[in-house]
Length: 338
Image (cartoon, helix red, strand yellow):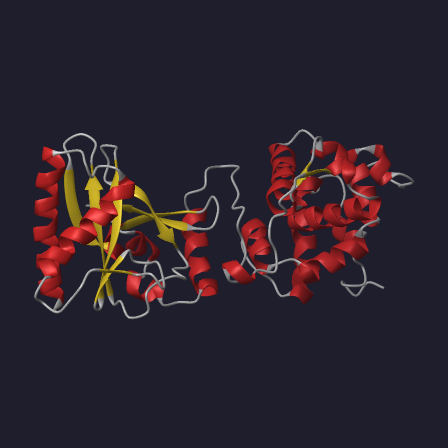
């Protein structure tokens, strides 16, 4: 069977299923529509030597006919848009070269259409494991927006797909929003995962508090901004979001975590953020080595080498601090001043 033959089959299939859907609601439920698609397709393939087989071994697409596949989607809404499969496509049938969508829209005027699966993908949802979203008749595919093609994208390992997804998601962020899913590694083999439980910052040990304060101070040098500036307010929002989305920690009063007298006790200047930073320099050095590259890209806009991160941080800190100069007091060893 050629690609033209299979597409002609899909056209006839959808015409027949559309007539059925308008005459009866028997197969309007998504749970029964896939079975009906397979049954009708099997009838149409009778005598051709081909069969509409369920892809039992892999799971994607739903129906396999030689090197062609059909992923079946249905909705009882009046919409041509729905959630599709995981970006990883870990369960894709290995021998299928061309995948199509057979979509039943049973809200409004019932109709069944088919389309190329790759051409129909118009968005990727990143609220959990990234999943494609499809729309029959979309004017611009996701991959056109990403500057690649579906076939090129799907053959990449997951760690090569994620930069495309992050760039796309980052371009859609509203002011004050951050990406929560940052890993460069494969989804199933990630060195970091968000904890299932959310902890209050009050539950942390003194050492844990010190470590995450060092991480946040390193990533978000805006904490040194003057107290009434917009940068200062943005900084504490960024810190709170970092604690929650990356560490699973609920910070009730982020400002107090950085500026309360207890964190800068015994300091010489009376500026609690400033005094506290003197006490976490070693933890910041460690964080500069172990924090993921994706975090620096997210918060700094670039990824310096681990050996250069402290010096880069000092430049940012000097820019935001108003009444003192961090590079004159902090990390003097890295600057060759001792």
